[in-house]
Length: 315
Image (cartoon, rainbow, N blue to C red; front, side):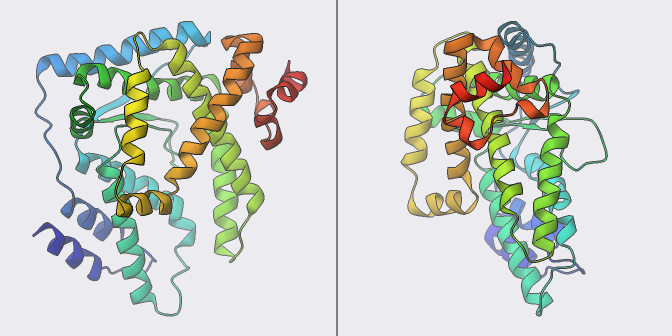
């Protein structure tokens, strides 16, 4: 019945734009089990304690003052899909006029592809720091998808509280970055808007896309560095098991990950981590935090492969 409801929502897509977001939400949720969100008091306190401890440890290690978002939610998969429908809609809003010569068919195809993407992500995302880009608010948000955390912890044969804590530390490092660099969200929004504006004109702005990739490489790499320094326990087995799980996925899952750019995200983790590890080895973890002092301190693409060049320019 779930697949039938999903297909019915997609084929019934309507409206004037290239995507029927109401149908996307209905289709994505119809093909996704929401998951159990019946948490015990100990589990709820565990999430809260993990976030508090991560904030304290990351502040200590990074030498920066920041706070976690006011919105910290423990979600099921349907909650996560609903939260991210708004983000996807905001990002694609400038493309609303780009329906094409056959608007009905294009709308069904676009609605189907977006629902597939959100359903796949909803089944796999563990935690998310959401800077709410392009929103009319300065608020940020932090989400934990509890059913996915429990599922993956079981698949990896690790204790759920330990795995949950590791995820919390990673997401809080992103809060540290955006807290240390109030300009970071504006920088990402500017490049995103430039890239989308080019698409509405039928162009591909490679400079804006390259700038987005470089900035996100710095964001993910610095987060990895802080994770390594701040997490109060062993984690090598967690990272290894997660990498093995990714590489062991079936061909369909691998194709979807490729289409969603998740391979690029992994490359951002690895390349950024190598850069910041080299900087920290040379000058210390706090010195690496200079990247967030001002937009001009972001590494260039060339500097990501030559950390000494960045150090010579910035420090």
